[in-house]
Amino acid sequence: MSAFRGQYEHQMDGKGRVSLPSAFRRGTVDRFVLVQVQEPHLTLFPEPKWMEVEERLMDFGSAGRAEMNSVRALLSGLTEVSPDKQGRILIPSDLQEKAELDGSVLLLGMRDRVEIWDPDTFRSDVEGEQADLDAHVLRLTR
Image (cartoon, rainbow, N blue to C red):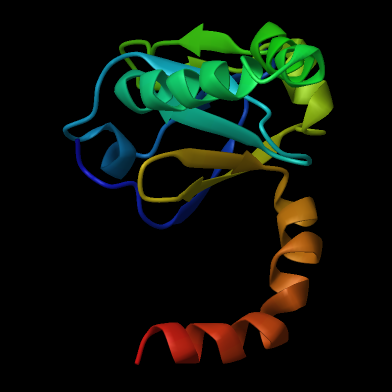
């Protein structure tokens, strides 16, 4: 599986379909899991990576009732998606609402997964903290 890198802004059509960048389609699997792991964005996992994550979630859930209820809540909101012949995935309306997606969406490659953001939310939440991040990145890339 090749790594997902870079950011791409694409239009989501009226049916909730968004085209995966060709760079994200090269050498990847044809099945993905789409879920909101963390607000305010969605995360698109290739199925093999999701299987690893799901195994860790089930281990976490075995710790007790509260932990399992957290796992249940997460799993109840996921959907499996496969790109169509044009390379588009369908984002169900409930997940569109959770991530406040409408029209333009930002697809951000995060090595082993893709985050799907509302572009304005990404700019305010992520790019707004760039100054703090710059100092950390400098230390990490030495």
